[in-house]
Image (spheres, rainbow, N blue to C red):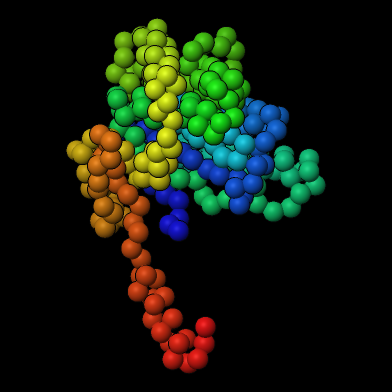
Length: 258
């Protein structure tokens, strides 16, 4: 399995995903999911993290953020949120060990249509899982903020989101978002799409080629492909170990090993 990617380039939107240790349901209780959201709010206050959407499930999280170029805002925010949530949980449960699994994964998302598709994909997470029938039934997600601006403790940066979606107003954002949610529910288009969570970049061909170029040697051998109208940079599947392991197997066979 490839290690989670987290190469950040300023001026891009990033979809971050992080799973609990061994995919355990460590966030199954609402109080723990709320604590994650509260620390997300703190990250926004402390570091001015520009949040576009979020989803806290029972065993993993999704976070959509914009990197405005200020140094280490995203890594520092993730360190704060993940660290405090894990510490509080372990203290309360008298538990030792990691709360989170491998390091979080980051996917660059192109502005406009692709960003809107990703936004809606996040909101439908628990519907796809069969836990709820509508996003409004799951408390810890950005869906509620997107549909009704809260008076206090706002997390989502509406000004930034509206600009990146190439819309004109909050009302247009609310209506477009609501219509796309209804369309997905009515058509039953709820299939899990790995493109949003396992790629390095998603968007038009020119967008992903530009990301690949900017990654330099880190993107040199990563393939670019098209799926359902979106282009993506796939994680590198070839490693030196692919050649190394067969040789080990052959040596074991010659030596009588298994």
